[in-house]
Image (cartoon, rainbow, N blue to C red; front, side):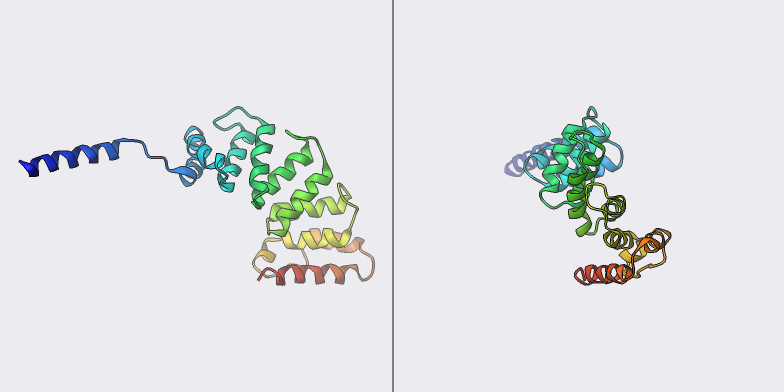
Length: 199
């Protein structure tokens, strides 16, 4: 009789555990996001995002920026990106910079876009490196600087990410033709220094 009671109790407990919903948290939310199940992503991400998880906050920003599972809200996207960016998430830093560049959800401000892109670029985020190169080339949000434009252009190259520097990309050659004597060597030295500090 005692064995029967234990068996019944174990069966009830097992049924309760397997039938009650268990939150998967951030990782489940990210997986749901990537399979386009945005309501599930939102449900899973919110608790971790609210308690300060930078990755969950970043994906919350994406949901609001793109209007997935929620109404499109650039200001809410910016708020979530900022929370994540303040913790050093380079993807959030890049996306926050993009919002400042376009003036979407935040006041348009090229200088602030440059600040966030530089933070992300310093962490190796290639889109931020490319965007920063354009800002230096065009003198937007920062003084025009061909050395910096060249440096970030080279660092954004896919081959450079694999430690095989491509000095002859079309973009790099275009910038090099505009440089004064000595600037190209200076820029190449900066590229090598940046790569050496990240080994």
